[in-house]
Image (cartoon, rainbow, N blue to C red; front, top):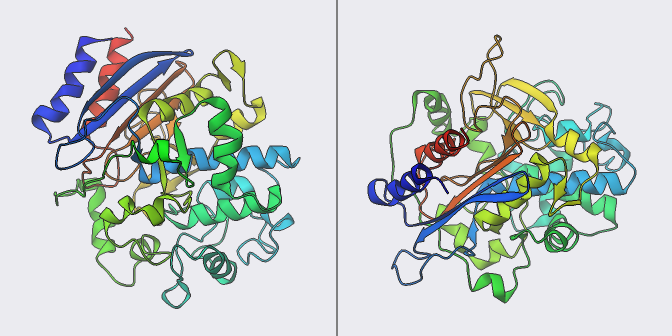
Length: 385
């Protein structure tokens, strides 16, 4: 354990108003950093433990993406197969050549639902039907835009069609998380998890960074794609809604997962360490390679900034020179992961065999990870020498 890493973790509480948080870092199959501190509730009555679960918003998308890749593998399909083969009712896939890799990398054009085609988020069948009839916001496979909510329904329906009706959350929980000992669940939370869940506290308003200003200006406009994307499907308008049991139990693959820092770090250790966990080869090499391979890069129609995606995961975009345009996932250009709203952050670095996860319950404003996790990323890499 590095003193500098621990000091950076403690500063989050002393200087940045952190309430409760955990850090877990793994390298080459071994946990090299493990820290936890604070409280699970704003009243500060329930101590935060190393096994405390917390809702992580979009950090759920990483496990959801791997679940779909594994379901494709089990069905004898690949990420290059066409979505239309198993889901012909999806209008955006019909005759467009949309592949599963493009679906996973936010290229389907279904980042939002039109105002007159926006059922409630807990109406699974209603949302799927709405996606089937929704006209894409751009030509599928010709550009990308982050799908904050709709991606989960798209992946869930694919998994159900591939597996004979098993939902993505059920598939992940029973076939991946439990056998691999990964403390992360998507819906169907047992009592042993419910007893350990932290309460998420919404952020105070803060000035956005220069990079984020175009997004927030668009978000304020009723007719903008960013506004529509973060409101599709309807419901969950308040950030505190993520604490409600009806949403946590629903198994929402884009934003409804709960986990520990160790659970997310072990998940990404699988992807950083060539599919090996606890000295067991748990993932096919083709799945690992697909998760790592860049699919799209450029201006994001939803976030209104440059982004890059593999089949289901975010990467730092690169300048034409090959240098990183920003450093969220550490120094490696091949590192990939998925942050969550408010500050949860997790990723894999296959170049160093390292995985990182930071989870917390005091949200901060902003699109991208904030200094609470980014300073820890910097200190973790500095500690490697």
